[in-house]
Length: 509
Image (tube, rainbow, N blue to C red; front, side, top):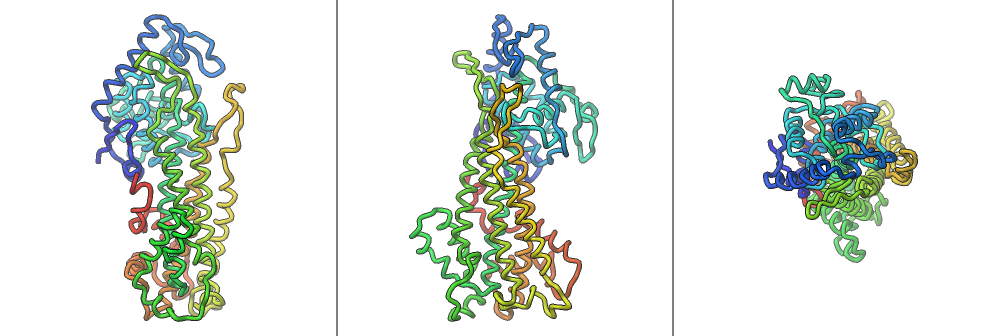
């Protein structure tokens, strides 16, 4: 497959596809002219001997130091080498693919002064299947993601490490095997590569896409739990939600009704004496609707940032101005990551409460811990304990990262966003929440089994069948961890997102 970058106009749908699978990257043909114009401004500055920050000066606190023309290439090389200080395990391939696309889009918009030949070399590196080994820790999310982007740039220059076809090797070896020459940076180019929020944004985009899949699965699992617990559909009546007016709540309530439509289980207890269900059942539109609004807000911020120019200084080709600013400060990404973290945490929190009801015979009118002959069999008892542990862990991780600024670079960079960590932890939060929802899916499917001969709705019957293709009915105690892993993977792989995709950002932006 091929992914054509239209600089500044990428969509969430396109980026989600790139996140899911490797694609060749091309650049829209009409982008090259503005790239040439931007580079001409840089060449004019160096040819005329002007002193301009980022082109022929030092960086940060050393911005007042002028650099001779014969040392400009060395300046850019030293910048990349000295900034390659990342630590920890490498960023995963799916995020690296997003980083590449975001960086190409930013560089190709004509504000960075980079040579067309340099972008061409970058594209060849990407399309050779070379995955730069980028340590995941070491960025504070201001002055851009300096350390991780330095590791990416160093790999294009033949330094550091890459993965090629799943094999780790030196970057020089990877370039040799791909028939490529190491990139040699010219004036301004190292700074253009290193400044930018592409790593924070790519990590946050992965978190957004995972949040969508977790959200979709939770709406499905919550609907199944309503039927498994013989809950009422009255709380999903559209009139209730229109009276409040919250857009996400109105939208989500109709999804629940659609998923539950035609349920024999629901018809079988239509005239029961139960007045109200617990909040985790009847307040699902209110909670999940608020989550949807948060996901939409975060998505709006992140798609803007994905298409943004965030290096420094910026070059304006209309009059040749080169202006230093602070677009590399990732505060918008940090805030988006923080609200996504809270939303992902809440999805799991309310899911675990439904799971607790399902395993409790006093509230569920189902066999204790969802297994026959309980006592000899423990059933879902400890699966719910594991879910509770993950929810507690999520609550700790959901503390906002954006409020934890720490000064760097001799107080020149005295306020930072911490967006990189804030975005990176979303993957851990999503895994925990996917596991909780996965267990609820198994428990709700088990509960629906016990409601036979009455069947759930046609849509949820298909979901139930999909689950049963990978995890059989729990008859007696067995080694349960692989079943939970299967269910978690189904959530993270987006197996249930088709039912909800029309209301998710990546289906609309």
